[in-house]
Image 1 (cartoon, rainbow, N blue to C red):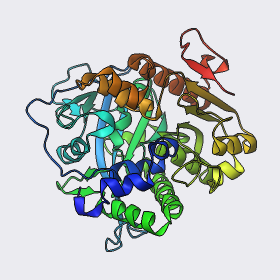
Image 2 (image 1 turned 90 degrees about the horizontal axis):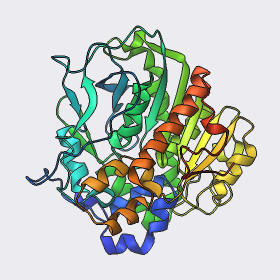
Image 3 (image 1 turned 180 degrees about the vertical axis):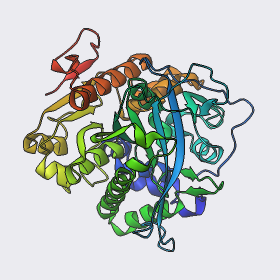
Length: 419
């Protein structure tokens, strides 16, 4: 990341509060403006942290590929006459555990990991975790399991200025239960996107735009642009679902598509579902549906103003639900389709990410953990997010109902139903 593109910490703090970072998904961009570190490799003391193993019956494979949309210029760098994205696809894999030639895939590419480490993300100290050396539970390039026929497809969208890997815990879980899951890096918004030629595109252009928007008082317009770009990217990825690499086009069911995301990714899931009827079911984890640096019920997104006719799940941090968040209240009143609103007791905004699994391994004290991900037990948070996401999409994309979403469950007493 180019430090010259960001405002100074003191200037940013005068405009951006902790509430704005937590309250609005797209305003997570502001967190980066509080500090603009120089990219650095993880140090020798960085640990190879581990994600919790997925619980489904399927082994997992993953492949990454570059997609190029020649129908539009890049919205953040106008000199680029196309829009390029990196995606990863996670899927049920054939073969046996430990298959030779298909090693466990890294959590992040080296270039992306370098920039993510430099951010000291969400309470994880710089050089505490070696994100490039971490391994997932998926085999890189493993052949897809074709024995189950065509499978439902999910798009996963990370929060603003977060990498596409930041929800791997829930993505792997869904893949292990038979879904093909596509994760997307939004180029020039994610802190570092590494392409097959080794080049890394950083977020300097967007951070510069954010600093300018703060000075001119046009932050809502910029946040709207961030959302519009994400939705356009998501639609383009949907256009390419039938052309996925590694033989995956033969196992995806393009008539059973869902989308989920955290923070700005949750907003994008709702808005993409509103604009594109290919998305049949959606899930938003703590993304406020308005284009403001702090939620106040104005500048609502179209989906908040008009609602949805299809099934949608809202899952919020403690104290954030359809009765307390104005945009969720509007969305709820206009949505005629099936809907549920859950909250996780003791959670914060970042609880619905891999932070729940990784921060406790980063050598930080309890105070840092509670500040960044709340008082909920981290392992319980991961289990709850996985269980309710799987239950929701099983119900609406497979017609399999385990009734977990019918009401409060003794299996997850920390999950509260707000509607």
